[in-house]
Image 1 (cartoon, rainbow, N blue to C red):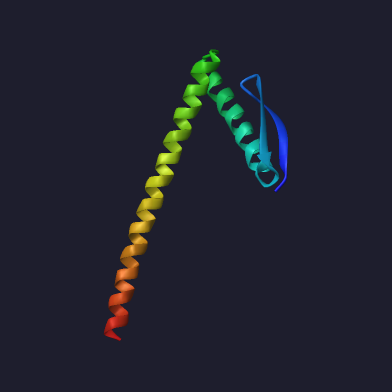
Image 2: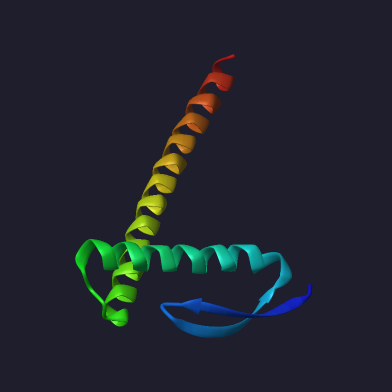
Length: 93
């Protein structure tokens, strides 16, 4: 596993980091999304303070993450129910 040294610009500030080569695309994509969300919030709310914008992006990202977690848990419950039904059907056959 090779490590790459990257310098990513987020909110007009450069951040040096080392990432595994297989993670490079994901890391660059994440930085691009953060910058796009910063720009969208700046345009939507007229806020120029970088710290406020970064907090809003982080909060928005966490809301999306929690929604995904809830959806995933709902899918797990459905899978468990289907497994139980399948087991009962197999017992009957």
